[in-house]
Length: 158
Image 1 (tube, rainbow, N blue to C red):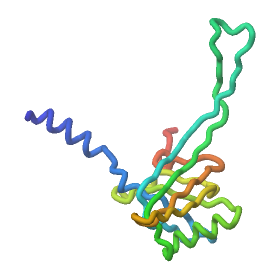
Image 2: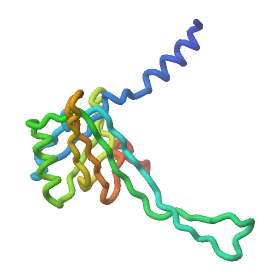
Image 3: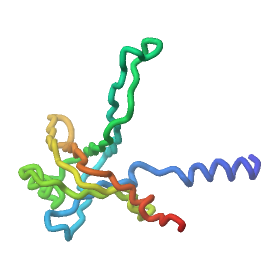
């Protein structure tokens, strides 16, 4: 293998992020303690845009026309249910209430912050199959912007 090929391949590997390194955390209701949700396995950050149809009778070719509307984000997270962990006690409290929760997504290996925002906990089911571990899943619906903390750290030149 040539040195150039080795350098190219290892460079790509070094830039890849392993999903196991990405953690979802929530701030407690006082805003003083950040808790990583115990038992995490899967994490999906959804970012979507609405479309608004603007088709009119004079639209050419019979094709619908759309423009971009509002943006939204949500997070789906699942894993092994650790009932007595503070994070799951907090999730229960948040679910029983109506207040938004401040979330943060971090890369624990690189020790970098990735995303943060306010979200509503809209779903928190517990699954208990007879032949497997008890698991949880949560759905968080963002309210306001999902802040990209890696971009926020970059100060634009003046």
